[in-house]
Structure formats: C-alpha cells, structure tokens
Length: 618
Image 1: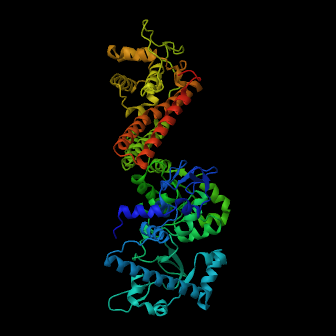
Image 2: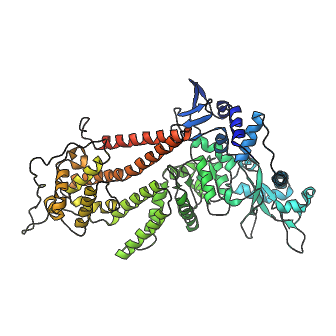
Image 3: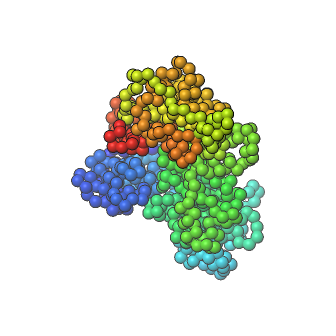
C-alpha cells in the first residue's frame, strides 16, 4: 500500500483537528488556536493547545505533540492503518489499494473477526443455559456481579469435544483452526480447543474479539488456557482489557498492570477500571511501549508471592534498554501470598489505593533486588554488588538516564558503605585538643573575581573550593566525583590530586592538603580558596566533620555535584538540537530547540536560587 507524503498531507489538510479532538475532549477557542485540559495527563488548568492552521496539537505540561494521525493512534489506541482508514473515510478520500496479497490477508482477517464474534456469542449462550449452572455458581462464589459478567463477556465452553465445531460449522474446519478454536491433529478429526472452561474474550483496542482465555472448572491442568497465536492474536503484543483501560486511564492518569485477566476483572469491579494484564507471558518490550502510550509510569502490581516478584523483576530488566526521559515503571508490593483480588476482598479498595500511592520507582526496585541477592560482609561481596549494578546501568541505552542511574546507585552505595567520621580533627599527643587550622593565607593579589553564574564552570569552582575548605568531604563524595572530569585541565588535575590524596587517609586538613598537592597545583587551589565562593551554601564558614553543620554542608554539596555532572549533557543536547535546527528548521526541530533552551534556563535558575546567599550575591 503506497501512502505517499503528498497523500498524507492532503489527508491532514482535510481534517479539522480541533473538531476531531473536540469529540472526546472539551475544547475552547483561544485566539487563533484552541485550548483544553490535556487528555494525556491529569491537570486542572489547560496547557493543551490545538492549532488548526498548522495541523498539530501540543501540551506544554507533558510535551504530547502530534497531528490528526498521531491523535488517533495515541489517544484512540488505533493502529496506524486503522487510523488512516477512519480519517480517510471522514475526509472523503480513498485509501490507495493494497496489493492483491495484502487484500487477501485483510479479507481473511475480516472473516476471522466474524468467526470470533460468533464464537463469543455461542459461549455466552452456553453460560446462560442449563449447562452453565455450575459456571454461574463459580462466578457468584468469586463475587462477580451480573453487571460485571455482562461487561466482560463471560461465557462457557461445555465439556464437549465438538460442541463449538458443530455450532459454527458454517465457517468450516480450516477457518476455525486458523482462528485457534479447533485443534488439528494428524490422523484425527479436528476438535474443540476449549472444553469445560469458563471463557473470557480477549479484545483488541477497538473492542473486537481476537482470542479467548479459558479458566478450567473443577480439577485439571492447565488452570488457564489462552488461544494460540493467530493472524488476529499475538500474545506478546496484546494487553488484556486495553480497550476499556485506555479511556479510563485518560481520566485517572495511570495504568495498573496485574498478572492475569481475573485480577483485572476483580479490581475493575472494585472501581479500578484502568487495569490491564499480559497474557500468560512475562511483560514484553512491545507491551511496555503500549503502556507508555497511555501513561509515562505504569504501575506494576504483580502477585505478592515469589513468582510474582520474579515476573516484576523480569519486566524491570526488559524495560532498561527502552527507558527514555520521563518514561519508566513503578512497582507496587502486595502482601506476601496475596494477589490484587485477594487484597481487595480482604481489605477493600482503599488498601489497594494506598499501595498504589506508595509505589516505588524502577531504580529503587533494582537496588533492593541486588541488595537482597546475597551477603555484603566482605569487600568481595560489595564489589559483586557494584558489578551487578554496573551491568544494569550498561543495559540503559539513553546516556543521560544512565548517568542518573549511576548517581542514584552511587548515593545508595555510599550511604551503606562510605566511611563515617565522628570528629573533624586529628588528636594531639594528649588526645583531646582539636588540631584544626584555617586555610593557607595567600599573598596580596591572589584573589580572583566573583563567580559568574552564567559561566559554564562557576559551579565546578564552587565544588572544588568546598572540598579544599573541608577535605573530609572528599571521601564522602569520592564515588560521585570519581567519574567526573572538569573541562579546565587545571581543575581536572586538582580534583584528581585531591581524590588520590584522600584515599585511605583518616584525617586531612586544608593546609596539609595544599602542601601535599605540591607547587604545580598550589596557585590553582589558592585561587579557588580566595574566590567569592561563599555565594554557595556549602562554602559559608568552616566546619569540622561532626555535627549538623557538617551534615548540611555535605548534603548541599552532594546536590551541587549532581547538578555539576548533569549540566554538560544538557548543554550537549542543546548544541545538537541547535545544529539540527540550523540544517532544517521544522516544527519538530524548532520545538526541541526551544524545549532544551527553556530547560537549560530553568536549570541555571535552579542552581542560582538553590545556592545563592541573597538576591544580589551573584
């Protein structure tokens, strides 16, 4: 099927975007544009704009951006071709004809939809008939209401090898086999796949039945049986209840992922309509991407047993290479041995809501998993922990996210294992009097100008000066600083020297440190010490290594180091976006350049406001 750029442009031009969006979202006129509360995230004041002239929408809150086709795929959950067909029908355009083979596949798929619809109707009829008494009793025992049974389309496959085959004989055995409803075995007549099971239809995003899940009634294995992969159904690319969850999640701003369809149905009845489940497999990469189209941080709420927690960990590992800014996974830990259905029945919907609100991020789940995977008593054990965390970081493809994970893991590691000192002085011969000396006094003229908040290295200078004034801080932040190289060679050499000298030394004061650094770095260190670094909170006054004062300094310095390490990546991204915009100025390149400029300005403002002493310090 040839969809040329010209044909797609014509399609977009014929669609009034504000009218299309206005069918599901309340829009109001705002000058030459329209505005609305963004349907992709919860907000109380409108930040979602629609420009009919340019044919695109944009949210200044969550950065959702796209045209009419993107709206149909992201908000309506349609496939690309389904979106094209619906828009073309509305615009009065004919979709270019597919090639003969594609047409045959489409026709066969349409016939299979008819087969699945007929099968669903037959299963429902059996549940409501005489043979369905036992199944209806099971549903009542599970606490499902009549409304829930109807909404989710429960049915029954009688314990009969040819019941469905006979009922749908008009379609023929080959089509029933292709739909996954019959099993074909060499030398034997095809027979019903589902027998003696409570039937649950599995639907696509448009609500069409594409497969079934069957829960056995009575004893037997497997307990749950799903349709095999068919032209309509790929279990690794399908999420159960997506058709109902998608509109519900636009209201709640979340998506809950549970292990099975019975959990989905149980918590939906309790008021959680925004839930989906994978279908007998671990959460796949394709399913994670589908979840991110609905929400940036889906909540994984797997069973509280060992198997459920292993499934959650598998999902975490699969997500690592896919991570992108703003998109991750959150994890909900259920009580040991309980699934969401058990929790709601035992403690009510409020208990589940409380757990959802206290979910933990992906980075925390990985840290806890590795921390509990073995002993940490020896240096070798701790090195093993670092190695495992490093392996997780290596799987993250986004450079900036990988840097943040490195910082997060390092902070947690330091909290556990970094050396702590109770005093800020070296005992004298008598063992009591502090031996703390002020920084080296410089000759006149050694002072430098004030730090420039607009400069790229002002924060680096402040951090280095803080380390020189309080050498005990070097060991505390050794891990965070070890992979950072300042752009100024003199600063890089100074930092490297300080890190080397602090390693293994229990006490180190400013005068001693400067002396050890030697003549080559003396002037660099002295200049930093006499710069106007006191605009930073962590450079005000002199502290020992004990008490709340030192603790606050260390905390402020840790935040400064994180910001210092983030800034080069942000500047690099802005430089790259500016270069792309200069080569080809499009809406996308311009928007990205502006986004990064605004982000950099906000970043600079955050540094200034966080560390300045007063309004005219900088």
